[in-house]
Structures are given as C-alpha cells and as structure tokens.
Image (cartoon, rainbow, N blue to C red; front, side, top):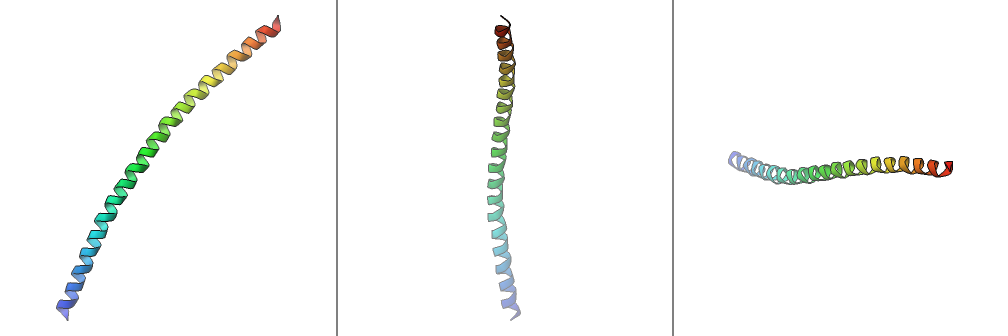
Amino acid sequence: MEKNLLEKINQVSLAVARIEVEHGEKLDILLDVVTGHTEKFNSVNKRVEKCEKRLDNHDDKIYALNSAVRAY
C-alpha cells in the first residue's frame, strides 16, 4: 500500500512539474507578445504626438496667414 501511495505521489509530482514547464513556456510567449505590443504602442504613440505637434504648428501658421489676409 505504501509503495502504491509513493508511486501515485511520484506520478502527481511529475505531472505537476510537466504542467509548470508547459505553462511557464506559454507565459514566456505571452510576455513576449505583450512586450512587443507595448513597444509598438509606444512607438505609435510617439508618432501621433509628433503629428499633433506638427498639426498645432500648422494651425498657428494658418491662423497667422488668415489674419494677415484679413488685414488687407
């Protein structure tokens, strides 16, 4: 009986170890994906900020030009 119990415990231990390895690999893959998305999001966010600054600058220039035209 004790031998059977030890055998079952060993089987459970091996199953747990296998699950930990498999899930660890999957979690590593998920982390890589999330990190990649975060980096891409940050890159896109920087580009959007740059475009917004340009747009604000263009708005200022258009306002100045319209003011100059109206002054005539």
